[in-house]
Length: 475
Figure 1 (cartoon, rainbow, N blue to C red):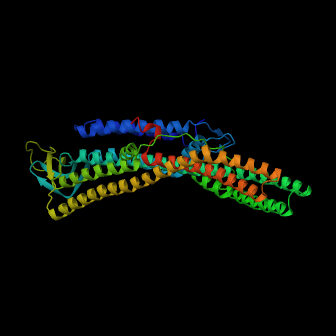
Figure 2 (cartoon, one colour):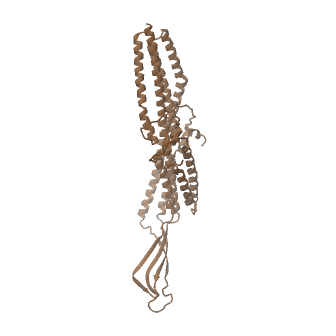
Figure 3 (cartoon, one colour):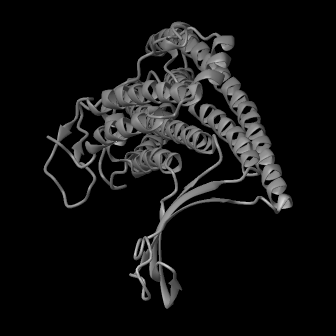
């Protein structure tokens, strides 16, 4: 079924075909040929990546009056379903895509010659000549910029289009990170609600144990009261967590461009898949693959082309013209060539007289080139700092997952069983039993929190470096 958004890939192909034609025909420069090849590689890579997202399995419902495709995110929906939904429906991503298309359309405009001028003159008073009166004239003139101007302008516009393509990639990857971050937080909440409910049931069980021992005069009444107080506290915590589902649903729906109050099912539990982290490889991948940095790199190249173009503005442009004068038959006599229309060829040049204006234009272009270089350096420093923090959070979460999963949680479970057995035997206190239950709850929640933090940190690292972790070593 073709949706309103399925025209994206087709539009890219159409634009690419036109771009290849304009960039290769008659350019005569190696720079534009290389630019065309670069366009081809990057466009097809982006189309392939975007097509994979669009092909993720989702379940379509009936059409609605809006342009947003409605998709059911049911209990079987995976993270890929959420990403596919966001890719199809997010207006910010489509706006970035259309910005890219608009930038591509700029190249053939600046590559073409200026429109020719047609000139018509009507002589209010006929000019009498030997061969007859001149009544009117018709002329056509074509302007030609100085040699190399059009190629430089097209190259600069092409670099701007490549920058727009990278900004689209950056918008797509940022959107995917926002969806992943919200999804993982939602998944943590689902497990926190489940674990807390399990502990509520556990405290109810401990209360029944305390009550049975109290009825058998083997335990004091405060133990029963303590169990009831603990149950009340856990029940309040459980209600608080359940109430948090609404705000987190709104957050995830906002990233998906769904109605904010639309219900979302609880995700399944998160799984832990450790990855090897090499900070040197990540830093290298950041500089090579981050779409924001790549866009700024193309902006640097574009501004450098603009400097060269500003220097060429100090050279004259010229125009060639051809005109014909409508001449009537001679009034007196029959001179040779009577009534013959003269044809005039013309050449005109612009005079770059105001050099201060041209020098100011060159200075402006140089400053913009410097700004582009500084922007890229500043972005690199900022993103590097964010990457270092994300790597730290990733490694810290991985350490905690191993600590709680392999050591603390098994010991907490064992401690609870031993403490309950001691309480039943009359050799342990109910306070120790409640403390053991609390420790088990906190450790279980801490492990789920570490799992969510790990997934969120991994998503952030992949967003910053611009590629999945498993592909960093294969660059």
